[in-house]
Image 1 (cartoon, rainbow, N blue to C red):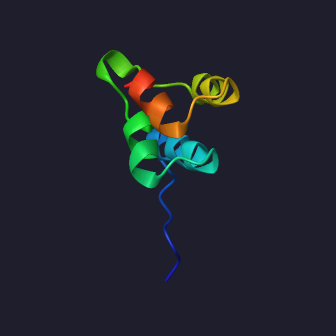
Image 2: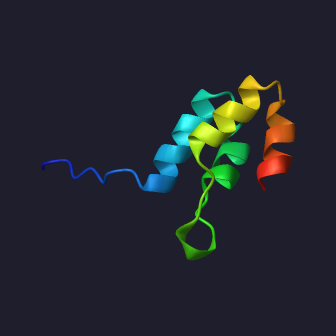
Length: 64
């Protein structure tokens, strides 16, 4: 039987990228979730905050 693999959603891809930046799975999925009107937190924005010295916890508080 051939394997049917479902491609990851955009939210799953964003969460994976955020976990690669060091966020926990919970933090990553909270940040990756699509908000009202299709808006979401951009990974580049998160990376910028981390590069400026924000901790992961502070970045989550700022962005949510």
